[in-house]
Amino acid sequence: MQAINRSLEAFVKARNLDGKIKINLSDVLEHPLVEEWLARHPQWTKEQLERFAIKVKHYVREEENCRRCQGLAKCPNLLKGHYARLLAYSGMLDVTYTPCHYLKQADQQARRAKLIKSHHIAADILQGSFRHFDQGDGGRLDAFQAVLDFCMSAQPGKSPMGIYLYGPLGVGKSYLLGAAANKLAERDIASYMVYTPEFFREVKGAIAEQKVEEKIEALQSVPVLILDDIGAETMSAWARDEVLGPILQYRVTHKLPTLYTSNYDYDQLEEHLAYSQKGGIEQMKAKRIMERIRHYTRPCFMEGPNRRKQA
Image 1 (tube, helix red, strand yellow):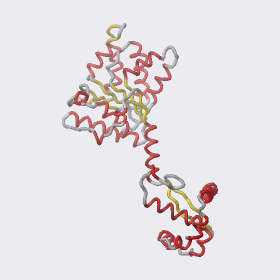
Image 2: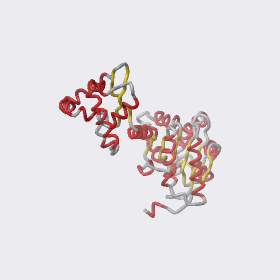
Image 3: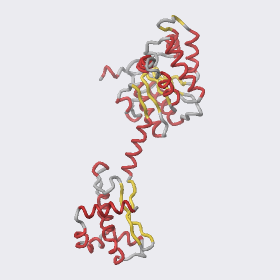
């Protein structure tokens, strides 16, 4: 409080307001805001307020600013995004500052943004919103509702159940899960959205730097993991068994949900995982991976026109 008062006094002196306050003090004491304050504090008189002329003047000016508010960016108050109040105690008067709803909203948005981590995901996907999603009908509406239901009921650490969203190219699967990340952030649930093909390429490149474990751990422990476009990667036996397998096993064990987008259904993804560049066909290893996907996701088919072509 003392620091704020010193700032206020310096603010007044810097602008040579002392003289102005003395000149129009009577006007200030007749101001409707002061009249309202006195009505709420009948133990105070205008004569008593004269001792605290600078603070009263400052309160009136800042409250007038607030009533003409044009948003946080244009806030002219001494403490941007705060409104002033007169606090009376033991015959003394001080100015207190409280964050306004615009500042609270901005802080909340910044905090939510920190909850969403992404890896090679386009900006328009990260800004996805359920409000702007074209629900259409049939599979699109079912997928929309399934993802929204997940966002409203997800309990990382208590249930590993996620969503497996699959369908043709360009129908908006990634956008819908981008919207999911933002909705989860509203519930203070952190998520990590990863473009799967690029992640596997990066993990392979991290071998020389001995940072593979670090990258794997980042995906293992996040409350909600979103693997975008799984199946589009060029799969190797190492990536399947030493990267994807441990990530999914950890998440299932710790009851952390995973969301997927893919052009493949379950069976097609299993076939994709069975083929590796050098290992040939390894059906059993692919089945082990799929066990951690099939039993811990709800499959949702999503259809519609290719929006990339329309754009």
